[in-house]
Image 1 (tube, protein in one colour):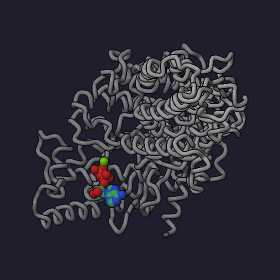
Image 2 (cartoon, rainbow, N blue to C red):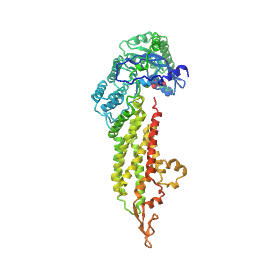
Image 3 (cartoon, protein in one colour):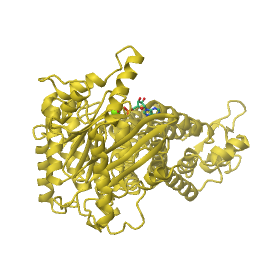
Image 4 (cartoon, rainbow, N blue to C red):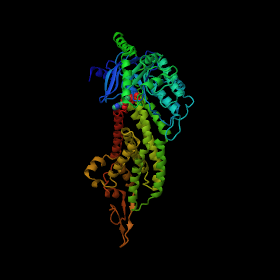
Length: 636
Ligand SMILES: Nc1ncnc2c1ncn2[C@@H]1O[C@H](COP(=O)(O)OP(=O)(O)O)[C@@H](O)[C@H]1O
Ligand SMILES: [Mg+2]
C-alpha cells in the first residue's frame, strides 16, 4: 500500500487527538468545511474506476457530478464519502479544511432508494426524523422545524397522507423521493453527498428538490456533492461547480458560469448556443452507443488529454494545494467545527424515541402483528371446534399431546408472516445507521421491548378461545401458565425470524430459512420421536437447544398434572383396560396425568428450567441480532 493510500485510509478513522468536537448542530450559521480531494484514484481488481481527480468544494457550494452511466459518479461519491469498503485500492487524499478527518462524522450520504416506513404519514416520518436528529427539547420548536422541512421540500400538501406500502396506497414517487431526502438531511450535516437525488422525478420536481438542497447549502453553509443525470437548464444553473466524468477520468471540472462552454469550444467541441450545456456535453462524452470501440477510445482519450493539459486542471490542483497550505498555517482546531460529532441523543433517549416509533409502527402496520392475530384467532376457533371440549376419557391423552404440539408448532411457524415488515424496518435502520442517527444497541433494545407486548397480545388472543373450547386443564392457574410458555415460545420464534431476516435480507431467502429452522425444531423437539430415541447428534445439537422442546415440556406438564383419566371397560372378561400403567392400583380403573408424563418419558420436566432456557434463547437470538447488525454492512 502506498503512503498516500494509507494516509487516505486514516482519514476514515477518527484521529485520536480529535476530542474537542462539540455537538451543536443547531448553530447552523457557523463555519463550514471545505472538502477537497487530491490525485484521487480508485482501482478494483486491476480495473481503474477513477483516476487523477482534483477539486474542492467550499461551504455553501454545490458540486454536480455528471457523466454517462458507468462513468464512475457513484464510485466517486462513495470514495470521497469514505464509504468504499476494503474491496478496492484507494489513492490520493480526501481532505476537510485541508486535513484528514473522519468524514463519516461530518457527512450524510443520501441514498438513491427510498427506505421509509410505509404506514407513517409524511408528517410523522419527518417528526421522528427531527426527534432523532435534532437536539430540540421544546415540542413547539420541534413542530416548527417539522413544518419548515415540509415547506422546504414541498410536502405540505401531502403532509398527512401515508407514505404507502404494499397494502396502503401512498404518496407519489416524487413526493417519496423528496421525503427521503428531507429526512436524511434533518441532522444538518456539514457535508452532504447525494447520489442522483432526482432520478425518477420530472424536471419541475427535480428543480424543486435541487433548489431546496441549494438553499440549504447557502443558509447553513454546508458543502454539497451531488451526482445528477441530465438536469434541465434551470436545475443546472443551481450548481456552482460541475465535474464531468468519462470512464473515471475528468473531462471538465470547474464553475458552471459559462466557462465550461468556452472550454469545450477550445478543445474542439462547441456547445450550440441555445442548447442545454449538460445535454450537449453528455452527447459528446457518451460513447456507449457509437458502436465503434476505437472511435470511442480516441474520443475519450482526446477529452482526457485535453483536460490534463488545460489551465483549468492547473487551477484545480493549485486550489487544493492552497487548502493544504491553509491547514498547515492556521491553528484551526477540530473544536471549531460544529455540526459534526456523535449521536444527537444519549443512549436512553435514543431507546425511548425508537421504542415509541417501533411501537407506533407495530400498531399501525397491519402486516407486522395484526394479520397474524387474525390468523391465530381463526386457528383458535378451528382448533377449538375440532378438539371440542375434550373429556377425561383416556382416549383424549393423544389428542391433548397433539393439540399442544400443533399450537406451539403452528403459531411459532407463522412468525414468518412478520418478515416483510421486518425487512422494511431493516432498510430504514441501515439508512439511519449509515448517517449515525442512533446506535445499534438502542435499536435492538427498542425492537426487543416493542415485540414483547405484541407477541403477548397474539398469545392471549389465541389462548382465550382455544383453551376453553378445547377443554384443557381447568385448574386455577393453568390457563395463565399456558399463556406464559406460549408467549415465551413465540417470542423466541420471533427473535429467530428477525435474526434470519437480518442475515438474509431477501424475502424468499429469509422465509425459506425460517421455515426450515422451524421444521427442524418441530422434528427434533421430542414429540414425534421421544427423547431417548433421538440419535445422539440430533439430541445434543438440536434437541436441547430447541425452544419448542422447552415450551412443550412445560405445557404438557401444565396440561396433564392434576388430571385423572378414565380407562375403558375391558370388552371381554370384565374389569378395565388402561392404556397407561396406573399408579392408583390395578383396580382403580383410572390413571393420573403424572402417569402419562412418566410413561412418555417427560418425568424430568421443570418449569423453571424451561423458563430459563427459553429466556436464554431469546437473549441469544437478540445478541446475535445485535452482532449481525453491527457486522453486516449493506452493500455500497
Ligand atoms: N465492485 C466493482 N467491481 C468492478 N467494477 C465495478 C464495481 N463497482 C463499479 N464498477 C464499475 O465501475 C464503473 C462505474 O460505476 P458507477 O460509479 O456505479 O457508475 P455511475 O454511477 O456513473 O453510473 C462501471 O463501469 C461499473 O461497472
Ligand atoms: Mg450511479
